[in-house]
Image 1 (cartoon, one colour):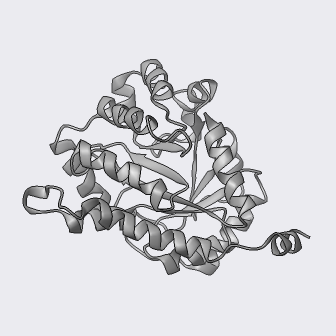
Image 2: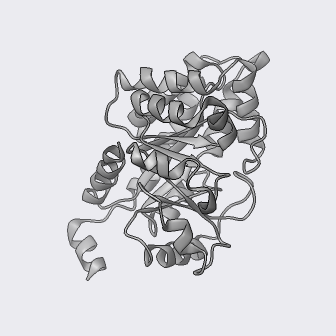
Length: 285
């Protein structure tokens, strides 16, 4: 299933631009609205979707995504239900890659063999499990790769050249560079330093390098897109959804559009940096 991820990046390269990767939380604010949001993302310009797995102790996530996870858990969203939403998404979209992002505990509780079978059947293309380091690859990474699921690893500003080979060893699909230290959605990245970091990582791998954490606007997305293979936006989309909710965290009439509108802005920012074939060739010369 990594073929969908590879194809998405190939399409973006053919257009001379970075990919837009969007994150939303499964089940937020309720399963049916969550499915509508998921379906709206590619139509608004997202190339790849990260679907968050709700968890009670999301240590790497900032306030926005923590709140989204709590809203989802409150309405009973679990791993089985999340895979069910992806299955329903696949009924109308067999092209957009879907990467499940979360923590290992719900997967471990569900059972790794069963999870991998069900994830593959649902149409999941890859996994980002933020609390499984390379030293734990036998737990999930290697079994996932045997099933054809990309295991996508995070690199951070503290990942030096000695650590980087271990991070990249079994990574597939793309490398996710975390542009700031700390939790999601709490700061704006230093775009110059991000570009340098992406170049350093790219020297060690043939995989696309995408950048996330702190990207909030189309202008931010454009800055990152100039020096990366992809731009990830999560907290800003989750915030947009949260602001649209009515009393009791119920979906409002404009909830789906609130997310889609920001995705269109981000997509426009990413696409504004597209290079012509001649410019791309000159850059690579």
